[in-house]
Length: 406
Image (cartoon, rainbow, N blue to C red; front, top):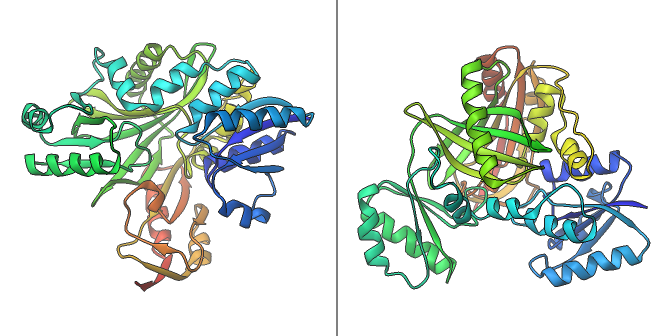
């Protein structure tokens, strides 16, 4: 039985759509998850043929489960993950149990932001950064770095804007570092230059050493306590010179990682005419990204990523070309969700492609501290950039979260 093993998923978004794509391709799907609640919601996962509860941090336990699956007579064609920090774990297991096209080493370096910065430090897209290690003097370190303020303070393994803090002055720098040191004892802390300028997300695949830029997406970032991306605008028409400079930057970065086959997304910021790397991750972006790309181009990127990891040629030709804007909805106060209204009215706006509401009734919602605190999205398309954006934002006003304060 042809089988693909997935290590962790979210209930929706790119990681879940990858499992659905594998089922569509005719594979038996196995999900290893540490989320016990998924077993209570088992009927919500018809595309998962076998679900196994596992401590995914325990590599030896995961390896034993893979061996057990093989003993069941299943032929494992791929071991994949679209969730940090398990992309590297899946690649290591894949190298051992179903050797193919993907190397684990570039993925390991991409997942660790310190390793990424060290690898790229001599390239022009690398901003100023500094690494605080356990045993260093906090006072000495801050004294050396305060002249670079404002600074971004982050955990090297942060994802989805979790553990990413902005320090505008020396006191904020100290408090931010202490906060992370308390939360993540005996780990490094990464400081990065705070960069200003428009920010873009680049979705890319590398196939036999050739870089393919799948999509270039403008990001709209909202900052309160954290940096939260609330808007994504996929660009249908791109100036050739603009594209060429992005392609050159992305190719230089991926060459440094020595990535021959794989998927990744990069966040780049244009700072006074120079592209700077905010971060890179060895997978497609989560959330609505797969749907955004599919709406714009007709390319199901998670499906083509699976094909790539199986050793097949990904089909990356555009079937259509539209501007797509995805607007994410957050809330301003903490409380228990009573109900959500307006979804049907929102869906009926001309140009709206999809409306997704994430939380269930009774869940505790809060203002955003990470990307996971975005509770709905509206995807709209148009032949004009500003029109797609207008439709998504206007339609989103119909959605209302009714919250009981706690």
